[in-house]
Amino acid sequence: ISPCRGGREPRECAPMRSSFFVLVFSLGASAQSFDRAALERSVKQARAESPAVFSRVQQVVSEADALQRRARGRLFPFPSRFRAVTRKQPGAAFALAEPIFAPERFQLPVSPEARLALRAGLVEAAGSLREPSLAPLYRALLSADEPYEVARAAAEALAKLGDEADLARLAQLATTDGPRQDAAISALGAAHPGKLAVSALSTLAALPLEVPRAKLVAGSLARVAPGWSADVPWRADAAQAAVTLFVKATADEARAAASDAVMTIDAPQTPALIAAARAEATATQQVALDALSDRFAHNPTRSHR
Image (cartoon, rainbow, N blue to C red):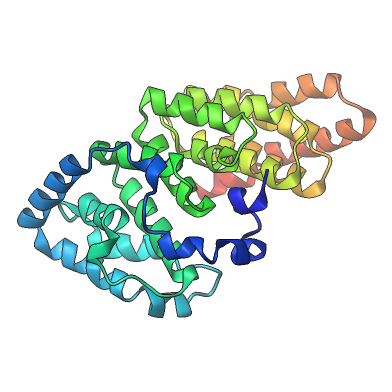
């Protein structure tokens, strides 16, 4: 997988992307599969009903360069800023979508980092509002030549909406080598219902994985089947996948991520799953599984619920 397509080494990819960022706010020919006219009508209606939220989004967009300069990490956390200015505001999803598909109406940031952070932040914030009519836009973004951060936000937006066909597509992307694989793996953690997600993640957990991907799988398993959520009938399957991932891991960092997933999932079947894995494990794996069993008996996540 190319790091510049997968997004795991963004600093090394900067020179290759410099010209791309000039057009980073255009969807591209491969992404013109959504009905823009219908979306324009929704935006027009939402603006008429709640003009204030559109003004607030526009203000954040105009401040993007300044905000990015204040970033403590590589990218400014625009999702939290947008959530703060759109919380409980009618029409917020459409106010956030407008700069994505109609950037020519806005004062866009100059720096590539600010543009990337802003675009990904808009998609993530809009996706968190679970507006079904924006699904075609997210599908278009996922199909286009967007940076990893934008693709991941679009994939997660679709996962949150829970359409069966979209979840099936994300599962297929997650288990197939390609430029969208890691974005799909990450997004599966937000899937609900999570049955298809756990099935795909289980397939991945049984494979030899490099540390970055193993950590993505572990993180998504933990998110899709958290122990604090009562409505998770796929918890046992997620726990099995996490234990399998733990056994397959050869690096300490990957094994630690899998262990954390086992704790977060906190399935009552876990002791039996560990025992079954131990019966077929090597001597080294048995020692690790014994430590996992002891940690689960004193699961540190339970004290935080």
